[in-house]
Image (cartoon, rainbow, N blue to C red):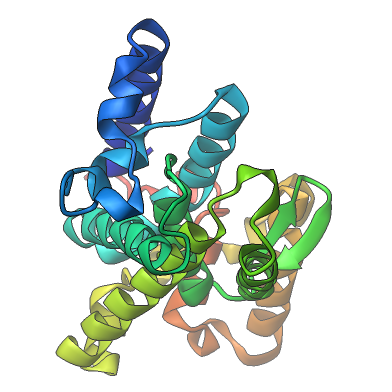
Length: 256
């Protein structure tokens, strides 16, 4: 687990425990859009509150699955900035479209991390509710459409739909700003680790059957691409992905 993902999960769990022992904490840290100028700190603190074990479980699972790869890709400083901007933008969008609805939860920030994941690995397979396989880019579109529909139809079930949408908007804006600030080619170079031929030299030893079914199709696709057009035809993203499945003894250079 990467540094900021670990810290955020621990922080959320600690605050959730405090909520159970001292309920007044929730009232002090919850974000109520119409009180934003009276309690401005709540645009940040609301992200660490949760309404129940299921609420925090799903948010932390999302952070655990998507966060490490995104943090490794863009760096820890950019990752925590992305997380914070996504959460704050979720609060701000809620202020405009649901001013009377109190909001708690890390969902907006986690949705921002999910969008970043989909941007860097758009075709990666994820499973909705552990059942429905869907490419990451289509999962983001699906969640956005559901949030839009639900948000403008009363946000049934107490879900902060506009916080989710705000998380998407904030992450998109931040990543776009980084892209334009550094230049698209430079930004991709900075956020794509270089995987050399020495790491992938024995790619034939990758066993697709030993790969989790979530990633198996992508591994097979990349192996077929190498067979057809050679190792040099892989993109930096494909190299990084495949390196995760090379046997450990092939990835560690011999000690001289």
